[in-house]
Length: 222
Image 1 (tube, rainbow, N blue to C red):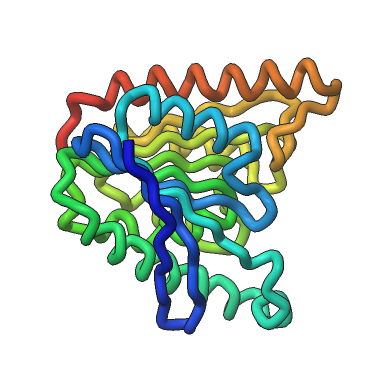
Image 2 (cartoon, helix red, strand yellow):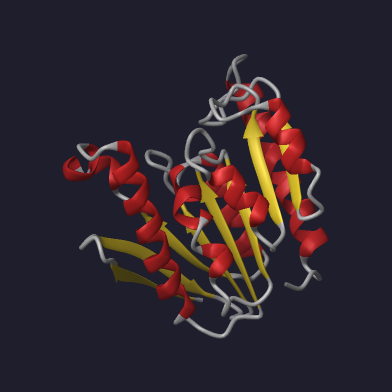
């Protein structure tokens, strides 16, 4: 196993740090974390462990938007534009890492904005599939981007998440390419209202859903 830190320079003049870890060289998994939900947080930590166990190479981003005072002062629409543009630059960088047989992109919250418009259009990515962890769906246009994507998608979201809308989830779930798993009582940080044991159980259920979906889509081609 080889691991190294890489720096991705974007059009917004942001320098983004990423850890690139090589294993078998057949599948690349790109992790795009949330605003304050990094790779050490439960959903991403266990998802990364699962992909490591599968022998996948990984590119784990460190998106430091929460610590960027200039970014925080931007209007919300300008923030969205910058995150989308950064997502394109990140995935262009990932294209140069190798000719992988499969690419899986996993985003959490703000990270789903970075992947939402850029990932489906990366035509060089073979057998692309996308995992949307608590996607940012409110007034972002992301729901339509997910709906239009031609690749397999998995959405994991709690019913107490501000982006959760039952009718929208049912509509997205009707697509043969999209699987939605909603977790009762779970909020945007994937914490359960009843406490720690229930939160841990919800994370475990989410990881089981991810594992089952990965197995089901392993042989799918796009």
